[in-house]
Length: 323
Image (cartoon, rainbow, N blue to C red; front, side, top):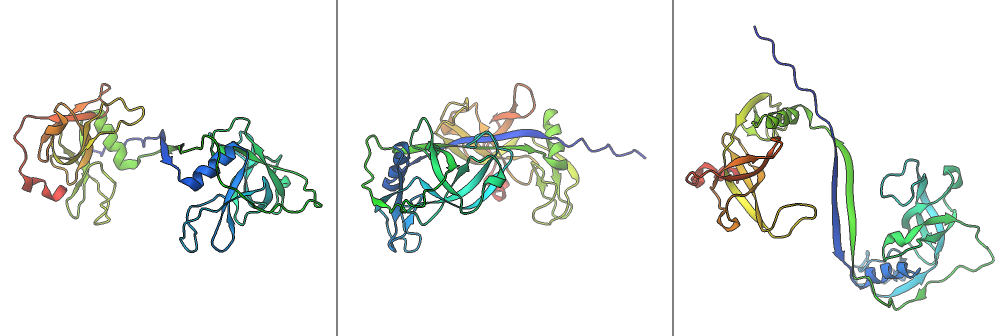
């Protein structure tokens, strides 16, 4: 009797998902962000007479279009808070701080931002705070560097919101907001074996013992039957293009010239299609049913792209269930 091989050690790797989110601004958001650049905080008045800060373009109660801008004070009151003892990359302050919701004087809603405080004992609901403006401002929420506590002069009457036409020189028309997620990924038993297989230039899936579906990449369990997939099955390496799209917009930091083709590829023996880039053929000649094979990366750890094999196209009936 031969002893079963021990399972491979589970893999772990730090991963970063990062992309810039670009959006244009309507008249309300443009005025709000341009105002921050000019040290002016603008809100918008609702049909019921309330003032929303940050402003929105449509009334949350009636869905009516909102355009009546008003200026509110740079001072306000903390309505709730949470202490952040370990600031992360890209957060407003490098030292421990409080996340706070601040209702600025003249506003009826609260603005989320950071409060610079020496410790959690210095923060409380009802604390009076004021804006600390960034030294360099560009028309973004980060033009508010943070809030800071201050001693309120109770003899000074509360500032009423003042009408504002929202006009500034060189208004901000759009923003680019970077989005980033840092995390440690552990693929688990099934995908660890799959990745080890790729390192050997083999594509290994797992079969469901109930419905016999072969999953590539394997998931560890059949999503249809709900049972563990323990039988390993080597598939491919060749496959068939089931569907595809032509990419015409170049992604940042991606060294691939557009246009190029991204496709769903049903590897021979697999029960569903995986995705991959098609190369070695003009983009306008890629088609459903095209037979392809992998071209491995320089380090041989994964298929860099797929290219035509030169075989006749697959018959539609052989892959129609995988669309």
